[in-house]
Image (cartoon, rainbow, N blue to C red; front, top):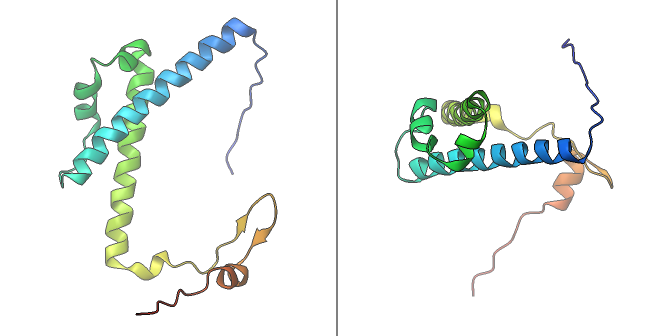
Length: 130
C-alpha cells in the first residue's frame, strides 16, 4: 500500500498564472525531448540519454526558463519512458504471448466494454477481390 498526501492550495489569479506558465514550459520541454528521441528512433539510432538530451536542449528557452532541477527531472522522465518502451519491445519479441488481450475491460462514461462486447464490436473485415 502506498501512502498519498493531497495538498489543496487555494491560490489567487497571480499564483495560478505562475503555475500555469511553469506547467506550459514543462510540457514544451517534454515535447522537445520526445521529438528528439522520436527522430533518433526513425533514423535507426539509439535513444538519447538524459545527458545527451541535456546538452541538446540546455540552450532552449523552455529549459532555461524552468528551474534546473525541474528541467532535469523532465528529461529524466522522458529517458525513463523511452527505456521502458524499448524494454517492453524486447520482451514482446521474446514472448509475444505475454502481451495478449485476454482480460481487458474498458470503462467509459457510457458503458463497460468487456471481452465479449469487444469481440462483438470488432468483427473481422472481409476483403473482396474484384
